[in-house]
Image (cartoon, rainbow over all chains, first blue to last red; front, side, top):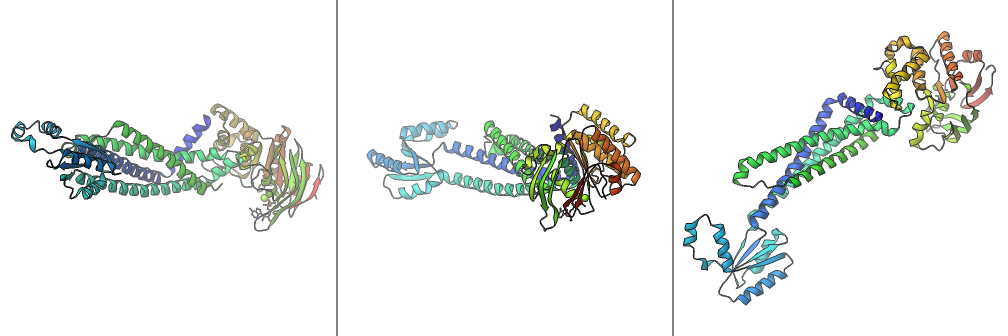
Length: 291
Length: 225
Ligand SMILES: Nc1ncnc2c1ncn2[C@@H]1O[C@H](COP(=O)(O)OP(=O)(O)O)[C@@H](O)[C@H]1O
Ligand SMILES: [Mg+2]
């Protein structure tokens, strides 16, 4: 306990030595963690939204009612045999009209005008990978039982690939900034070690263990990183809360993200930060204390 | 307490600091290590606390096999030794008191104990008047005393002093020697390196003489010529 006291005291003494570097490190970690936090949250939100919109259905094949229902059944079997297909649901005329009635229950005039008989029978296809909808369209092309194919996936697929690009580029940036933070930490520790050269030499002569000499350095790196990530996570939560009430939520998107997802993301980020701090300090100390 | 068996130390460039030194120092002894500058005195002391590792031979200090001592155990060895290096190593931004209490802090003593022990050590080396002075305000002799006080923080079994009278005039030198003899009388084994034969001749203690890294003579109670 006595020793921990010394370690903490020295961690802060060391950090006061290079305040600008310490702030730069914290900011770099903050930006890096914020990028990771927000883009991963954004992707989760997009995924939640797209799955809702589609209700799990990726391709709808409207069937020609002039062919026999045996032909419909055959088509369903064929579709089910494709490896890309997870599930095919046979949607009857009456099911279609029920759905229509629910969807447009707010517009009674429309419901009165519609002749439900024109609503076709359909096959609703759930794909393992929504991106594969094009394959299904190609295969079904020219099939006499098929009246029309609609892939509700196109817009959504574009959105998903946009989010993926966003996540990828943000990850790359976050990585670069994290690397900058890494270099900053190494340099801060090196400067500290240089300033405390004599003190460290004396400690060694007295018989201080190398762990004892290192701990303030390790704590400094971990502490700075944790501060950065904590602010980033705080900002990220605030940002999401704000978005829920903003125009985006009202017009385009439902900001649907579960607290448990955010909590897990926060914990994983904090844990990664601790590991990052440890790693950076080990490299920094190796270079600085050369023992 | 200290055993050297056929110890040699050759540096990477090939310069030989010590060659085939064999000697034995028992508990409670006061031993001078004398020799001209460059004869290997500092090197021998550094081997004892594993600042250097012997190229050849076996070293045993306070019942620890220094030769095969793993790195992580070096602190354990050093805690049993009091080390006063050739250059006084005091922290310039701390007072005498703080320089000594720093050692106690590093060694893990309790806060209350630290103040009491520091005062005792300061009293022992006679620095009461200068305890709130910074190193730059201390004379050479006072700096050496502060280093000796700090070296005693761990209650060492052996005190190793590298030219503690190096830059001091004879009067002050004698005061330091008297202090070391007082510490020795309290039971601590003392090994002191010096190039000053006049001091050694007056005190009638055991003298190990080094020349070009070789142990030239080992004379007890006698005069070194
Ligand atoms: N770290 C070192 N690297 C290379 N040579 C050294 C080193 N330390 C000491 N020496 C050499 O070893 C010899 C003994 O030095 P030293 O033990 O310092 O002698 P003394 O303390 O008696 O003056 C000298 O020739 C010196 O140049
Ligand atoms: Mg020397």
